[in-house]
Amino acid sequence: MKLRVRFAPSPTGSLHLGNARTAIFNWLFARHHKGQFILRIEDTDRERSKPEYEIQLIESLKWLGLDWDEGPDKGGAFKPYRQSERLEIYQEYVQRLLKDGKAYYCYCTPDELEAERRQCLAKGIPPRYSGKCRELTERQRQQYEKEGRKPAIRFKVADKVVEFEDLIKGKIRFYAGDIGDFIIVRSNGLPAYNFAVVIDDALMQITHVIRGEDHLANTACQLLLYEALDLTPPQFAHHPLLLAPDRTKLSKRHGAVSVEEYKKQGFLPQALFFYLTTLGSGAQKEIWDKNTLIERFDLKMTGKGNVIFDRNQLLWINRQFLRLLPIETIANYAKDFFPEKTDYKTMSDFLSLIRENIATFSEIPNFWPIFNQPDISLSKEVISTLKKETTREVIKLFYEALDSGRDYETIFKDIQQKTGLKGRKLMFPLRLALTGQKSGPQLHQILEYLPKEWIKQRLKKVVFD
Ligand code: GLU
Image (cartoon, rainbow, N blue to C red):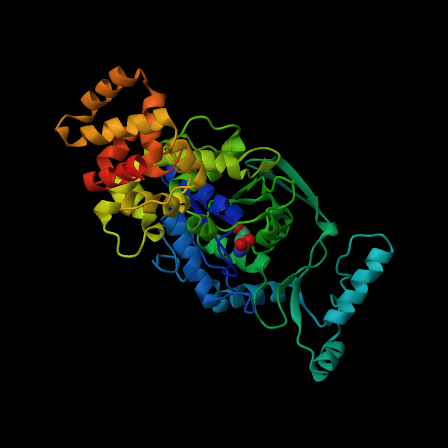
């Protein structure tokens, strides 16, 4: 049987880095094993799901470089791929469970359930449903119906041990009795996550479920359902979660947490992809391209124990990708950081100039005016440095030689002989006069990039002002 995995986001917000990591693992696993990667939208939470979030999720996944073999926007043999369009399918399975006495209607109100929960907590036991509606008589049911109560449907959990072999965590055991009868259909008639996910994974012939370890308890519920419905469960792999430096779940209070935000901050998708993939496998010194990642991917790479998100590490990786990728690739992602209507050639020339000097595209606006406007503004500190005698001398000699028709190298040699200055001492004054900055692109690149007129104008100002 062909290996099939899925990413199943709920469209209730933008794509969180943690979920993006899960999506990447599934994608790499599928591509490594030449299997299939399916996108399924889990949108049965009517209040929180929004079509615009689905659009955004898909955009973020595509930006990261993921593609899928089947999905809501693509179709496929197991369509539909949106849970809200599969409600009839779930019905059939609910009916089966009800008929077999494996599920039952529960008329408890939210207030009653809350009171039960509090009682459990007061007794110091973990809250779980008491099973109060398990054995309702027909008369009791009718009475509740008459009162206008809308029932949920609960699954009858047996007192037994659930055991499975997790591909990352090894043997996992749960005592099902601790779970309590859980809801499979809510009182609004919509299926609960744990139920819909089982039907979908089974019908879509998913062979491996790779997801965060926060789903471990759900897996226990899901395995009980597979058994009750006589469906074959997939293999499970629960990877460690992405944590913030304070070792709590990475959330908004730690700063940017969505793929979209990182895009807006000027990161390259290749860098984010690489970082999220390799973060769990220890310090990453070597940059691999996507094909190498596909080739070498192993579930062990998802990490053991805590996986801590480190923005500085991501910045370092982004710098490496800015240096390594072909300029055309980089330019394709940088558009939003340039003034409107900047043409492609200007963008790529400019990026070639500054790519070694930036950590993210968000620094483009700092460099842009220096290299793309005739004048620059100099800080007081720079002006006073430029007034120093040796500095001014170098600039003057260079300025005077500009129209001599000699190449820059010959001019530098000449100035070196005249002043006795070389290396940085010789270059620094010119860099400062031409850019107003102490560091930046190499001087020969700057001289090549700036129009000669601007070079003259900037130097002249220093010499004669
Ligand atoms: N919709 C679920 C979520 O976003 C899917 C979890 C799963 O992979 O089963 O958490």
